[in-house]
Image 1 (tube, rainbow, N blue to C red):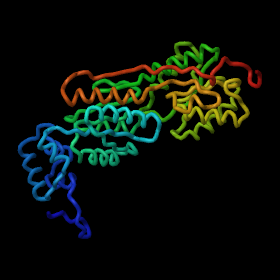
Image 2: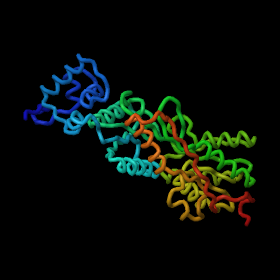
Image 3: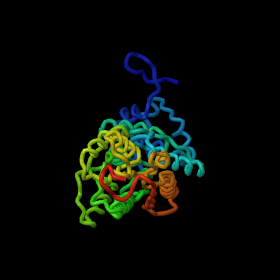
Image 4: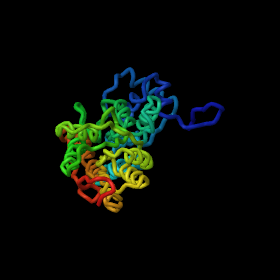
Length: 345
């Protein structure tokens, strides 16, 4: 079998990008020809088939699809795979997919940079796919979702609803509003918020927090931003400790809440005696923390299962349901209590 020569004379197997360049078409067009997933004009099909023949391009996965006309592989595109919510969502997708005879491939998009997203999507489309699930928790996921060819079945999984797409959602805004209401109900004049990086300008957790304060006519403090790193919460905790008006803090996730609690402790304050702290997600360590953390239980694995079910309906043409939503559940533990003067109790 002949191979295309790379720069410097080293032989390498031709890629789908090579085929697209030789044919003068896009990578998604080549993918459509290989999988038969959508109509391609006869002229473009001839160009692609000629390029495949000239380059001796032989993708084994696509070859199987050309025979069976049905792929058993789905792709998951995510901005991260190590964070708790991401990992659990992917686990749910994988469990549901395996039960239906599908395999799962994972593509990580490390930033929302257009070139980075284009490379990730092109790499994903080298495989013969039945559909794609996108974790739309962050800017890379949002950017990737815009780049997926419209002829491929796709589902988005996130904490905020958008119209016009197939989507499985955890209603973060409703849960954050309920959690903020709970803290206000304990007697706190207001609730401060430490935000994790949003997928867009404002995320559901921040929206729900602000909505609850507005409904209660409570002061709305400035949002404090943390990174995804738990340690970033430590400095925020120290800053909050310096403000004697702070009695309650709602953090965008449990890991940041752990950092905030550490920062408060380093400043000599106690939780919840001096400052109440609540998290979000119900990380496995939340109930083991000292004190055990009031938080919101987000069933990420179930989100993955629901997302795959929507995607499977699109793949099989067995349903037209576009939306699945579940409201996360509040978990009351010992890190939140009624306010009292600092240093008392």
